Image 1 (cartoon, helix red, strand yellow):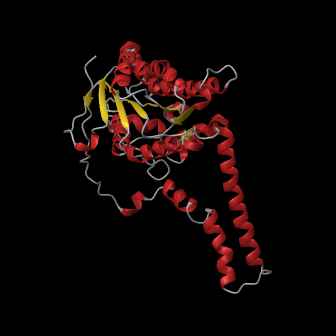
Image 2: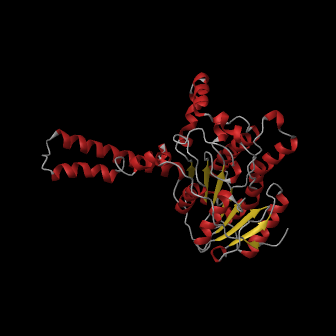
Image 3: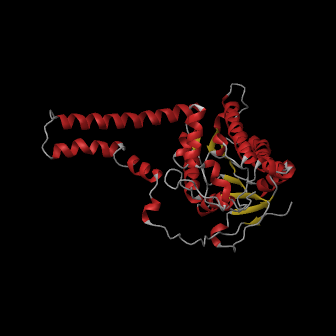
Length: 366
């Protein structure tokens, strides 16, 4: 394996698209505005306070209704907090002076944005990728090292781990992000294409987990494992049989890993390891270049910067959890309980099975 290299900085030169103002209004934007306004406990309690400032008596029905609404919003927020704590447990201690982040497929796309984000914080970052970044080196990326490594081969992953521990220290955060896509109909896929997709998108996670998890278990402050899957792992799509199958395998792998870490027979230190599952919709990266989103309002394209911000936020909190963007990705599982006739209507209306018709091959991110 080649010696580690400094990861070069990436500065996006993509032009801002010329779109009308209403094209930027999405259901996710509306939901975010509502969550931070009328559905926020602080704002909800301002309503009865405003009524009192207008000299409404305590006995007035409007005052009663506003108090009941504010109490309901507050109770719902508290129940959400309680549910999160019961589901994922207490947070682990994060010490950024000691954390070492390993990102697979970090030379481009989402992995590149995550690497740059942690680099700007001064965190030690190791990127495992088979290709080098394209941009010139800059001062903002001194904390990021590139290790030439094919994560589909466990021998190379093990050698990379030894180099990382020698250069940066024991890894504490593993972000499994490497991926590739064929985008061809099932009957057009060659055995080599299928093997490449499964090895890169699925088998590599087994390799990195078996290599890095023992180190996370021995760390007194534990560690965090991030699994970057896809909403397609839950619903599938035409012309994406190999990709969707691999992502569905990742969702099952992550669930099984979480169960093993929580079981009574779990190895020592398992209680300090946190797991984060990421199931995004269509990403605005080179991996799906040429794919047109069926509905920009209901299913907007997720920018890598936006998704990276959510991943970093959850990792910062030191908790387990799930990250699903855009909004529909959180509720897409509901389709599975509907009659199949209704599922067919929903798939036709969403256009999910027509999205790959304009696919130009994309740019592989491994």
